[in-house]
Amino acid sequence: MVKGVRGYDDRVTQEPSEPRGFDPIGRQVNLTARATRALLDAALATAGATFADWTMLVTLNARGPMVQRDLARSLGMIGPSVVERIDRLESAGLVARSAVPGDRRASLVSMTDAGRARFGVLHDAVRSSEVALTSGIDPGDLQTTMRVLAEVADRARALRAQAG
Image (cartoon, rainbow, N blue to C red; front, side, top):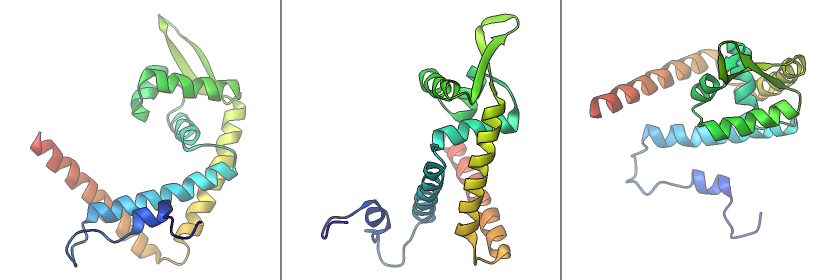
């Protein structure tokens, strides 16, 4: 890094402009998410994949073949973005599209054998990264952290719904 030039990690970890003693949980969750996502991205890149590849393969592995529009919805994507991603994975031989009986406009997306093998490699890379990340942290503390984060997320969704 060039002296005097801040990098990504410097920007996201610098002190907040809030009064001393005020550290909102959302800020810490955001910083943690960015740091862990950067670690995940690096692990996937080393395995020759992107986060986008990983999320689609994880979804197809968990749910099995899916109608393209349902896959897009489950990934929170709009049509053109998911089509581009499917095209890329299809050209790599990792997924295949087929017709949906009774609906000529719909495509069914499924993982190929090569896709399942690739998922296994990526899963191992992600798991290895996760083990390295949590190594040395008390398992009980990790369970508590996961439980509390889930409660915070549920509470945030409920408050958002109340606000309209």
